[in-house]
Structures are given as C-alpha cells and as structure tokens.
Length: 268
Image (cartoon, rainbow, N blue to C red; front, side, top):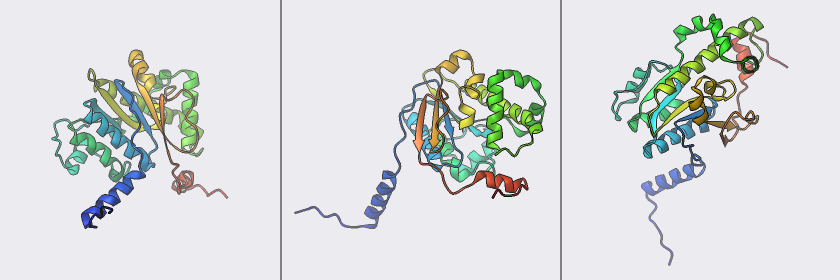
C-alpha cells in the first residue's frame, strides 16, 4: 500500500518552496582565489540571486573575507554591526541609495554577508569626487591607447550613442576612477587564506580595461573574473575566467528609456 501523507498547510508550503527552488539552479563552483570579481547585469534578477548564493557558500566554507560592492561608496562599511543587525541599520551604515540601487534587489546579497558576520564594504568613488576626476587628465594614463579607446567605445554603447562626443573623455575618466577605487578597496580587504568577493557591473570587471588593470600585477594574476551573462552577446574574448549563464532579460528597451530621459525623439 502506498504511503499517503496528510495534506497540511505546512506540507503545501514545503512543496511550493521546493518547486520554486527547482527552477533556480545552484550557484556554480566559485574559484579559489584571494579576489573574485563577480560581474553582473544590474537588471537581471538571477545575477543578484547568484551573488547572494555565492556569499552564503563562501561564508559557510569560512572563505569569505569581505564583500566589496559597487553599490555603496568607498569609506562606507558594516564593520562593527552584529549579524542580527536590521536592514535599516545596514542601509544607514552604507548610506544606501535605493534610487540608484534598489534595496529589494541588492538587499538580500548584502544581508547574507552581514548575517554571516562578514563585512560589506563600499568600493565606488563617492559622487563628491567625480567632478575632480572628470578634470584629471592623469587618469588617461592609467590605460594604454587601445584600452582607452575600448573604454570610450564601451561607454558610448552603454549610453546608446546619445552622449555628445565632447562629454566622452570626462565619462571615461569617471569610469577609470571608479575602477581604481574598487581595486584599492578590494586590495585593502584581503586576508590570508580567504577570498574577497567583489560585486560590480560586468564592464567594471573586464581584464582589458576594468578593475584588474589597476591591481598589483601579482594580485591581478591571482584574481579570478566571473562574468554573469544574461543571454545576449558573448563575453569578450579573454575577459573572464568563468561564465555563469542565465536567461536573457526581456521587456525593457533601455535605449528608448534613455532617449526619453534626454528628450530625444523615439526611433521609428
């Protein structure tokens, strides 16, 4: 006779959760390295979920030294907060900007680290310093001519070709300054025998023109780049050590939104 379980509310909830989890593949293997750069697409929910799961796995293994995030400014961190700190306390400590970085999207990643007793450290260049970076021609020397041109093209594509050419050099300098800030923050967070996990947009983690270009050469060689790819174009050759593929994100035309914000006519 087959065993029949009573259908209770608790059992229904458990089956629902199991069904939901079945559609979410587990996080792939995380490289064993002092620094892992995790590149995401900001509007891909799967990427933030994978980042959260990576934080949990590294913390459970005792490998996670710190979580460095692009989503908070350098100089802001959760050091000293207890694992049971509230989300409000964490947001206050990081001076979290929910307009730019929706908390409902990134909060689970941040809280996974806090609840594991691991510091979350902001790595982005503060907005107050960006004007000075725009005027700092020394930043142009941080990349060779080919990489500087590639960075310029990437920013132009990222802004859907809507930026005036006169603004591109300043935008490139801001990108370089942000990569520098993230690189310095990650380097300062290193701990022997552990891993610093850095979460940023995929463009920031590219080996040819992103954060790796601003690391000490020995650390750059040991660091590993994981590119989370939501369908679309293939990862640029040689820019990542591993790729975590997820379904494409659909339903939004970012260029159309940007044209509307800038008062440009819609394309027909």
